[in-house]
Length: 206
Image (cartoon, rainbow, N blue to C red; front, side, top):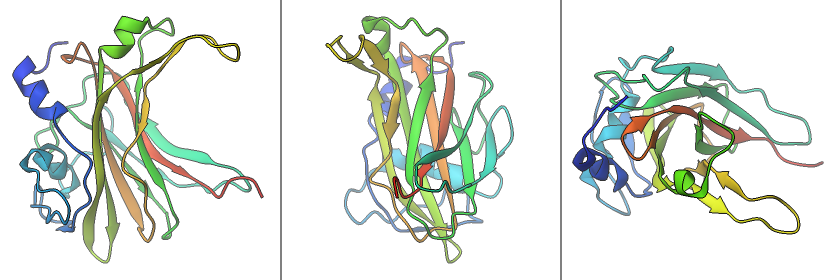
């Protein structure tokens, strides 16, 4: 389904990773006070922390973190399809991960392709973007944003050629009680598809 003109996609694709200051939870679209890079283009994702954002399919989901023992795990949710869209958070699927208890987490966004047989050209034509926000002491804090495309890995003696459609958002963070992760996946930049958003958690091998 065609959802935005190319110019609008280029606008979304120019998002850059940045860390920011607090957003009040009850203020949809509130301004982020960015300590490193001031980017007005972050507004698309910043609107996704308001209390009126829908956190149910097809626009989002809420999941509770389950911490693994001696390993890593994802706390995430995937969109049913590519129809995610809502006034407060346009063209983004939003996953809120609760129960973090201040532990370190690494937010990510991942596109789920329509077929497992993704060619190199198709891989490089899949747009991936998203942002992450952590909640503590009554405020949302920007954890970073990303805008990129699929990464193609040629065949090697150890694995076959493949397309990677998962990217981390920022460097992760701790001290948050919950985190919201937004995501958009679009083939050729205009045809929205399924996307998974969430966080990686756990302490790894014991």
